[in-house]
Length: 351
Ligand SMILES: Nc1ncnc2c1ncn2[C@@H]1O[C@H](COP(=O)(O)OP(=O)(O)OP(=O)(O)O)[C@@H](O)[C@H]1O
Image 1 (cartoon, rainbow, N blue to C red):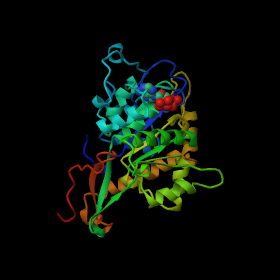
Image 2 (image 1 turned 90 degrees about the horizontal axis):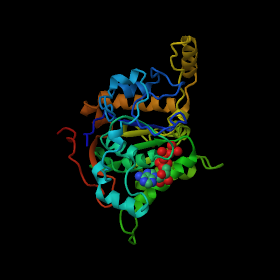
Image 3 (image 1 turned 45 degrees about the vertical axis):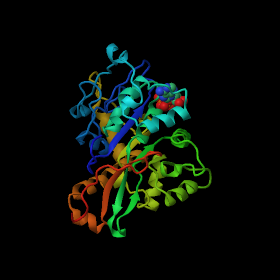
């Protein structure tokens, strides 16, 4: 497990484009579609490319390659035929695996894709996951996020009381995918512990924030004001609306992971270089359009980037931290059986 650093918020991006007609799995910022850009342009993408924890899960992958177009690279045969790992071998805790098995007995072993990306999620690396439809990308991400530590903070201003914040934000294009994530996660969480008369407060683990008919976000918002979940699943527009209404409800600076599921729907891109044709005009035009009218996901990722950057640049300044309420980080696993299992704390203010 990599140690928490305020500079790092891992980003997980998934895509299952119809262009990926055969079984492949690779990790890179660049996808193969003709319309993807060879040079990431939005701030969020730049954030990925400058991050020190950039993934190296795929052989030969490095952060420098974010800016280079790459050929589609199928998994080497040897790798795909390698011995199947168990969930525990991927780094998931036993109590979580027990919950998974109880909730979904048919999910016996990780898929090849899950074997590759779950350890990377747990380590806090940046990922772009691309594989064919139904290969378990979203499900694996849900599991990986549940297996990550929950970050809580000492609130020095309130006598050292613990405060929890949303640590993982999952952005999806439609509300039905948010419901799917929510259903998976709550079912696994509920099964991490044999049912007793107290049950498990699933709101602490996962919540969804989506538009529901005429009642704009109201149900989800009510819960969110009461309890902060470890994982929040929502659409980019809903989070933007929430941010404009109450920016303190989900403080972006405490996010540890941002997932963009179905990235090819959520982030608009510019045409890829075609050496056979004149591409510059089309690229410039698309870039201009994106800058003038960024989509909701770009806008949101840029806001998150700025919030994180500010905290990162000032996090060394403990005085500033104290003035902001003196929040001190400590870690605890978001796991029903081992709730609040503690990781070593960072030093206390003034200590
Ligand atoms: N390791 C596994 N073993 C068996 N079934 C699995 C496994 N992982 C996921 N599944 C099941 O496979 C189905 C598809 O999973 P999921 O939606 O995560 O795939 P996906 O790759 O994200 O698909 P899409 O590209 O369409 O979003 C789900 O019903 C899920 O329960």
